Image (cartoon, rainbow, N blue to C red; front, side, top):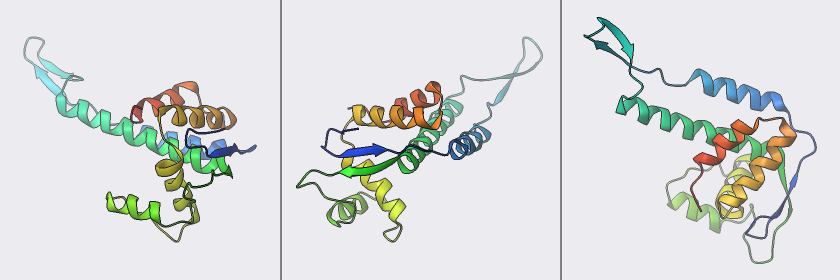
Amino acid sequence: IELSSGVVLKIKDKIRPSIIIDILSDVEDKRPEPPTVYVEAIGREEVNLDDPGYIDRVNRWETVSAGRIADALILLGTEIESIPKGLEKPEDSGWIDMVETLGFRLNRRSDSARYLAWVKHVAIEDQDDWTKITEAVGRKAGVTEADVQRAQNSFPSS
């Protein structure tokens, strides 16, 4: 697939769905529990899905969960086919300085961490790029459309 930056990523033929399934299971296990509130009119505790703190925790959980799924799709399902002339490569350091200056930590010795960060911070330029990757890799990995949609909805808008 060609991204708006001009980077072409190859979608790997074989993707281990078990890793995605494990991430989805782990994510679901960490879903926030809704608080309860005593409702005097009925004389019992009721789940309060409208609690502002709960809503914030669920929103954060959804964002983190979708990010983990997207990271797995990128890392397990893509590899570089070509990089346009003039665009920094994963092994370059300029983009890393920018990412670290913005407060992100990167394990510079890990090829996987470097590749993932490079795709997210250099190769991907807009929402359409996220969509291309998640849809193409998700299909190969057997990730459901709902999981892909949840991941896409958490990404910054273009």
